[in-house]
Length: 289
Image (cartoon, rainbow, N blue to C red; front, side):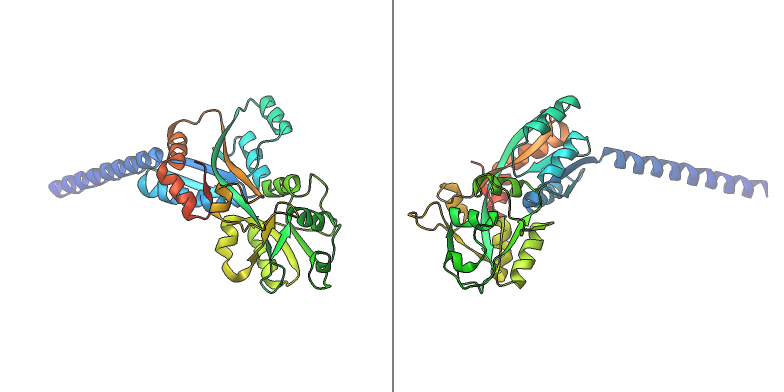
């Protein structure tokens, strides 16, 4: 009996030691995982997710989360210390830099790629091209009917991103000469919401990142854009953004707190590498180099 009790006790002790060892191993493995958070521009979410997916396939010890919300949301997260990388479709504003200084944050700007802004309408709309001036007049409310730009006498339904979006800010500066958006403009929470609305409304107009416009396929029609009345209309594409012939284009950025290090630095280097820039092209954006 004593021998049996000894054997049982020894077995229990060994099992207990194995459980402790497994528990420690699990904790060690968990603690060795490196986490990178990316937050900001909805324009860049698709691209950043593609980068993250390929990078994590090659680095099993790294976990990357990507969320949108707009460039302003991403910059706010950087200043609040709740993201490692802010993705932004605009430059950081002076007032944001001042706030960063107050908080001891040093925004570090990294240009990662370029993007064209496609002006999109419903495929049933017979309008195929507009000048930047005409688009601007639509968005400030000077033109309210498609008849004003050579179309039928139907009201123009204006769709825009919300004010926290970097695309909203860039579009206002580049197309509208910094004038206010029409009070009739409907502010949409995401690019996908704009595409969905335009696919269902024959007389709606909106603007989206080139990659999203390409991905939408026949749900929307991307308009040719004339830089001025005398210029030919240029369709948004990788080639027309690269050669600067398409007039509504901008750089896309990462912002980090200071020079990145560790896993974040390695991820940034991957994004800027030939492999990372090939992903840019595959996703419908334009490589930075």
